[in-house]
Amino acid sequence: MKRVFTIAAVIVAITLAGCGSPAGTGGQAQPAESPVPPVASAPVQRPAPPKPTAVVKAPMPDTLLNAGAGVTNGGFEDWAEKRPVNWSMRPGLEKYVSPEATEKVGGTTSLKVAGPYSYTHVFQNVTIEGDSGGKTATLKLQAKCSEPKTLSVAIALENGRQFYSQPHPGDGEWQELVATCAVPPDYQGTALKVLIDHHGNPKQPVFIDDVTLTIE
Image 1: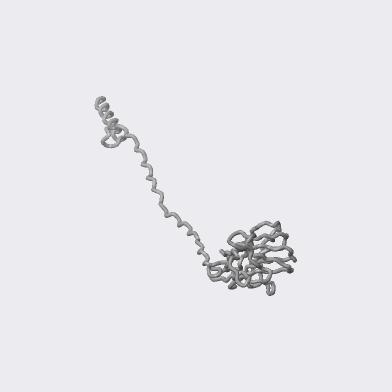
Image 2 (image 1 turned 90 degrees about the vertical axis):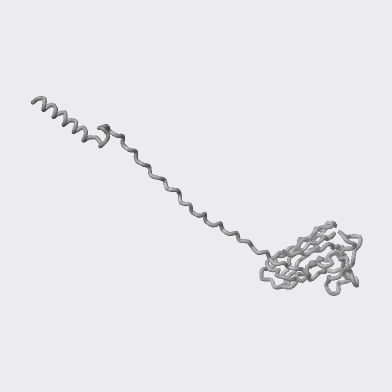
């Protein structure tokens, strides 16, 4: 009887040991499986925002002065009836201008203006073709003057506005005089006046050469 109970106890122990292990493992414990890491999703490729379009300003239309010639006879080479061609003077003062061959910057002659007078103007109307509004006109010339603050140059608009240069220092040397004019955006004039202004009851002559006018 004792032997029977012993065999039965062994069978029960084996049965209990087999129930605690997974089937087919022979009762040996299996290592736990590692968790599968989540798969990282690829970043979403978003299209780059469009670059801002550069604003390109259209070039302003060309403006022609005297049909592209600018100031005509700006070197005072051409004379007719003792007057520089394409230039005008104050009425009655035409006799005070003359060509000068010894005092000049280039070419063969310059313009000599000599009194006596309280003041005089030598001028030329330069026609405009195209839109000049909003542009800048620049007048340049070479001048020789021996009396301070008696010689200036100017650009005159048809509405009466005038834009003067600094006066010649009166040092008896050739100096460049420059006048600039900011043309109003709504300007509808058809010409700009180039004006040489000798004033202040001058006693000494002045000499003018190489007159140019540009607009841009």
